[in-house]
Length: 467
Image (cartoon, one colour):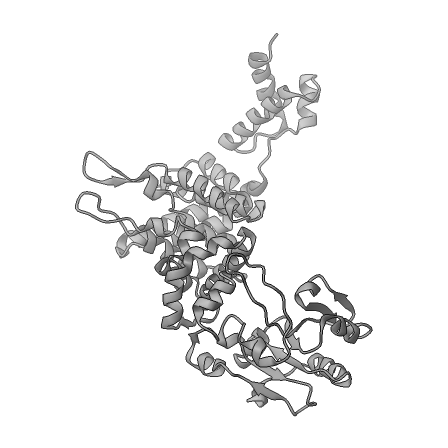
């Protein structure tokens, strides 16, 4: 089995240093799992019988950089050339079941360390300190078989594992998204029973795990698992809330399934790798529908202004999950704008309306294109083709206007300094009002030229700034 692993040279170097001082060193966890899957692992994780102070002594002078911020938990980080590594002393912690903070205890053997890890596919290790070519594969919990079968199980009872760290429940969903694994039956049962314990985990940790999940290859599978087990109710409760009941009086499209399909279709349009902003916007674009659902007098069901309500709900959810402001702003803006195109109809928009569409989207225009095109899940091929042709028409008009104007950076024909000079005023609210007037005029009529802009500004000032 070890022959299947491509042990990097930096690991061999490090193992030799540990062996010289009488310690054992193991490549462990995700590093082994990903090597067996022929996936790039990024950082290298090791475990050892050496205590933290001894680890520091071994890497000092060998590593290009060393950090000991996790030393209280037995972890020392280091960088050697282009490799980032983490080395952790064998752990044998105990938990109080009420918080994530363990009573840190160091162990003396690899078996005791592996049983406390999250999943069996992460509880495999390769001993390196017997010398190059003499490595030993350690797999006491059937991780290799689970890996081959694509099954996600825990080394110990899942109830114990999830009680030790409830974030592991969300991590299970993340591995479903990233690796396409299927949770074992006992893991599913524990997830359903214990999902509420996720509330013990800080929003920052939940957000980091959820973002990795959303950026995985199979986020829909993971989200369906979260909804089915109740995890979603503690992370993004608005998603299961989209499972609106259908009855004879309130017929509607399945908003929940529709949103998952839109997300998948948006993923299919990505061109530069996984796009967290686009994926979040696609997932959440219709979360305002349950709150805005109304039955109209003619029997139809409407969701008036659900994009406005949805943008507000999205902002609250992402803020609660501690997402960066830039991510929140971009996702919310896409949710707010996702219906704007449907006013395009058969192409009756004026050039002014097209300019506003582009300007309002700003740097998000490309993502908005992808979101709007993805937001078509009808099985009516005629209607679907008509929508796509209509959007093709809009994009063609945007391209035409781009050739004629600086469409992506529309500004008034006069800048602030020119406005002040022409009006004979200093900085202040009058300049701002004049600037907005010229910008609106530019939107409506396109480029005016300096001479006409000056005439328009003088006429506006005579009417609005007199006295």
